[in-house]
Image (cartoon, rainbow, N blue to C red; front, side):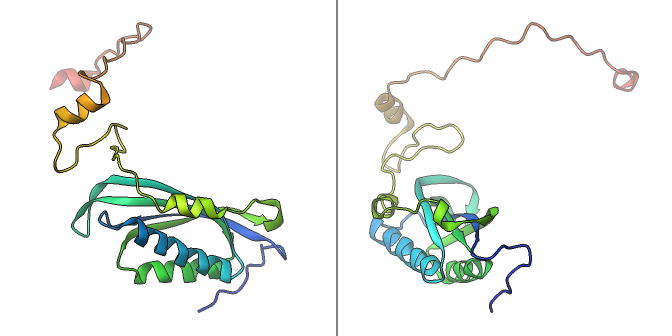
Length: 183
């Protein structure tokens, strides 16, 4: 099903989108490259232009998705029309390795000639998953199944958690309200 062009769009312009999708953690580098190639073909065959592809590596998920606690995050930034997004997301739904995805419109009425495209090297680099996994909340390397937290700390050279910062001394204490004192 194709979408009709919006009356708000100027002729010969595209909209800028970003998509983040999560692959299963056991996906190999060859499979990641296959997904990237497939998604790139979908965008470029329909007149879109890929500007940036970034592999954020294997990260811990905020909650369990499809019985997985980790996933490989990939970030895409591209120019396209709304019908390209429809086809792009339809293909993502059909891929077994894609656990979740989110597409967001960043800007509209962008001249494709004014934006640089992505090089082949970017697609090759985005196929490699990070060897060291970092926790997305703390930024510290997480142990694999064979490692313990002590071996990870020894590898990083840290033996203690960072000290808490000193409290701000310019704050004024808040007085209790009558409702709070009644309890």
